Amino acid sequence: MSLTLRIDGLSKTYPNGVQALKGVSLEIPTGMFGLLGPNGAGKSTLMRTIATLQEPDSGSITLDGIDVVRQKDEVRKLLGYLPQEFGVYPKMSAEAMLDHFAVLKGIHDRKRRREIVEALLHQTNLWEVRKQNLGGYSGGMRQRFGIAQALLGDPRLVIVDEPTAGLDPGERNRFHNLLAEIGENIIVILSTHIVEDVADLCSRMAIISHGRVLLTGDPLRTIHDMRGKIWKKTIAKSELEACQERLAVISTRLVSGRTVVHVLAESEPGDGFEPVDPDLEDVYFSTLSRAGEIAA
Image (tube, rainbow, N blue to C red; front, side, top):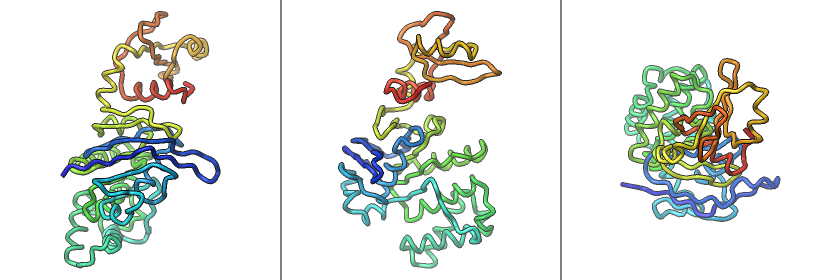
């Protein structure tokens, strides 16, 4: 069954005066959806609002006809959530903790609960370490356990907030495979500042910054639309300021002690710049740059 999450005109200002969301509207279909933006962009505020943990000042969210803001209990039956800061009891085993979460989710039949817990431990590749205390788990194992608890109750919408920050490449790869598997038939919202996560996993995405949606679309399509507009050159660090004054520099990176700059230009900027095949990072930085929201 195909689901759609609709967000319309969502705004939120905190008591300290920070306006975290400014009229956010999105349509999120079944599959993996990437919410990409820098730290402080409003991603976590949006995730917490969808997850019924806080209310917006204005706007609406609907999931398959359910009003997310007003029908919180109905939404929670369909929701799995892995927050950015996910706490566990370090002296409990994964198996016991998952069983405890299953009870909280309303799965009271012991036999059924055991079957569900076993299936999730296998699915998240934690079966062999199910008796180990969670305090001894690596970062990647803890995140996979976080997904296991988020999948309790057969959710139709799963939200994961910054799930791969701090994971080593191997753990990140295992986590990606797990997310790709669960994202085939339900809505999975992946909120991250790591561009590669979205490029690797998501068929739809939005770029958000300072509480506003700057771009939505298919990542591959957005990359294609940038073709012929990204140029690169290796320069001395001392040349960077002059380059920034003359051209729309969207990113700089240090390679072997030299500075490689990427610039956005409709035609060849000259001065030794060469065309480069764009990637999602170029889309991301150029989108922020056009909105005046980064200084390269």
